[in-house]
Image (cartoon, rainbow, N blue to C red; front, side):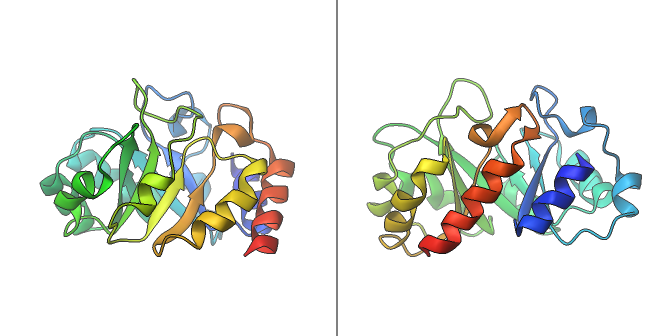
Length: 203
């Protein structure tokens, strides 16, 4: 995983996710990477810790040990819980979006407690589905914070993403995952490099 982090940094990727959810096939503690290994490296890439319904004590301990730059809350965390975490580290609240969801309604309770949002596709289990939701739901919503767009994004979506970005004011970054993997946690660096280059060309 360390080699891939360095490659992502060389490509110009801004964020790398570290999943601290033990039911995920991408669980960071199974990758062989440790805080001590990371301490020896001078990586500039932002480290995002992904948590699902974890205790606030464990989240903050992990933030300290792994020197995380951001925390992504991908479970059923409450606004109050989100506020506790965001008092210590920049916090992304993830929302799983299904058909005809009212995004303004879902995000409203977190408008004072999260620093950023992430929108992903709803699934029966926590974690990505590899499928897209209807991005137009975001054009019909008053999202009051910068957000990450996630959910089944592929190389073929770059033109559509460029057009979508012109319709919404707060799209901050793109979260790519399963469509750019050789296996869970093992990224296809050639695909990621192609994607990054195409995104820059279409800006």
